[in-house]
Image (tube, rainbow, N blue to C red; front, top):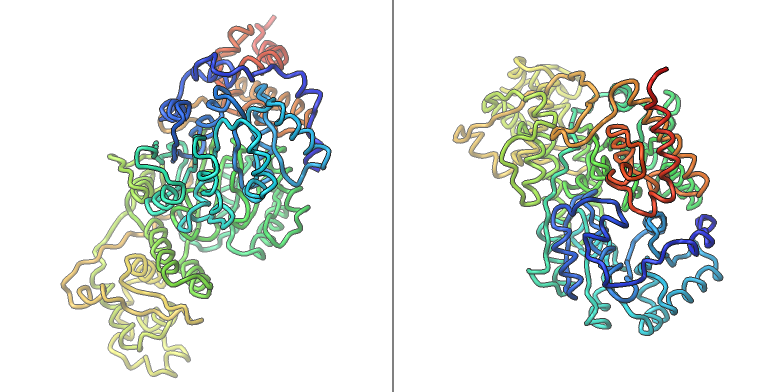
Amino acid sequence: MMSSVIDWTLLAAMPDFATKAVRSPRQVLREVYGYPSFRLKQEAVIQRVLRGGDALVIMPTGGGKSLCYQIPALLREGVAIVVSPLISLMQDQVDALRQLGVQAAYLNSSLTRSEQRRIEERLARGELDLLYVAPERLMTDAFLAQMQGWTIALIAIDEAHCISQWGHDFRPEYLHLADLRQRFPDVPCIAVTATADAPTRRDIQQRLGFADEDLFITGFDRPNIRYTVVVKKNPKQQLLRFLRSEHDGDAGIVYCLSRKKVDDTAAWLREQGIEALPYHAGLSAAERQAHQDRFLREEGLVMVATVAFGMGIDKPNVRFVAHLDVPRSLEAYYQETGRAGRDGLPADAWMTYSLGDVVAMRKMLDDSAAPEAHKWTERHKLNTIVGFCETPRCRRQVLLNYFGEALDAPCGNCDTCLNPVETWDGTEAAQKVMSCIVRTGQRFGTAHLIDVLLGKATDKVRRFRHDRLPTFGVGTELSATEWRSVIRQLVAADLLAVEVDGYGSIKLTEAAVPVLKGAQRVEFRKDPRPVKTKKRATTPAGEAFVPETDADKALFDALRDLRLTLARDQGVPPYVIFHDSTLAAMVQHRPTTPAALRTISGIGQVKLERYGDAFLQVVQAHTASPA
């Protein structure tokens, strides 16, 4: 049970950080968190909230969004109320704060009634700096009545995209949070998220009553993530090759569209010797919790999941996120892939893609009970992810452009940059396909159209007398695989449309007419052949140190073993003690004294006192001069 990890003795022994407004934000950053300087627009947001202002913060995963409300919570009088959507997320964040010596707690159904009462008593005495709570509990009359008796430092809304009906994780219960603005008009409110396109941002601003000057967008680029999309052929084998060649023994997430595919893939990976766990809504709550706990607390596990898994996962050393099916939007894709490489070390976002994925997604959308206006928006979003998959351009430029951010030069860290895509004039090929579609009545799928183009007199072709059409056999210059690529790219370009009629019938769109008449040129990308890549040693920018020599790897592994032992003793995930990036910095700099260890990013005063001697002993043992 989650509540079993609460160590009340440890809480009582923690330093008291409740003395407010006597330190600067930079002092808190250095003393409590162990970071030398602020990043992005953190300091500007913090100063705004300290002055009592509001803020909507759009900051990439791993960019330090939580500091934007945690530091003001340590400096403003009262308790910060943090709205968090998931029990597991609350626990992780509170565990991490307690490791720093911060007085934090959460209220949710995982606690016993006596544990909840103890937290409520501490709130009444003003002993807590941060309280994490779910929106369902927060907006009850009883809880709101309790809040009236507290001094509220600020209200923070995590995963704020859940507020918007245009957001990819919309949650109706989040809508009621706007009432807090009416009940506590003088309390600053900060809403944070990693993913919000322009419509989502406008919706959040409107619902929370934020002005334009309250908006802080710090950029969406995650340069340490390498983006790769491969044409789906044998997805399980493709995934296995990717894992074996680049991420053997690493922790990662594999996303699938259906529960059955999740179960099948997880079982198959285990048969291949890869420790993998399934996660989807069809499992019991106890099974889901057990699998998530293992993923967070153990090293090297692979979680195979539907999109039900992942929101708010703070595990920083997820080295890859793989998609065996196309996500429903670029916004969802960015959010899901953003769970990789939160520690800033190299990570991969890898995806297999096929036209069948698009058909399946469109069918799910069309079969939903959503209003037509919402369906139209979602179709547009699906088209953007298809365009991302088919682009010959730098994928990072396409992705960032979707969020309104320009990247002047290709990134050099995606598959289209590392293995440049060839293009060819496909106007004539497009005209042949379009003519074939029209002559066959616009009611047949890809396989049949390719048979006609290649001149294959199958039973179906003969039954419909399509072997007598002028387009029968006109496409023998391309293979069946190449024709599938042509059709796929024409769909991505919105020149063809796939009907969700159970047959995948392909029809021309209005945009196809100029092409068919020869008034518009079409260019296709050649599907690249698989290229064996090597595991990278550094990020593209060269900012992160990765242990590479045998001696460095041995020390890094020893530090990880110590961290795991300490984490198990306390019942917390290893990363709440130190991130991999902090351990890597220890390997790089080989500190031998507490003062030298204190200069490592991520080591604040409390962690230095609590863990410094143990980690210094490991470093010294691996750095001793040979006799």
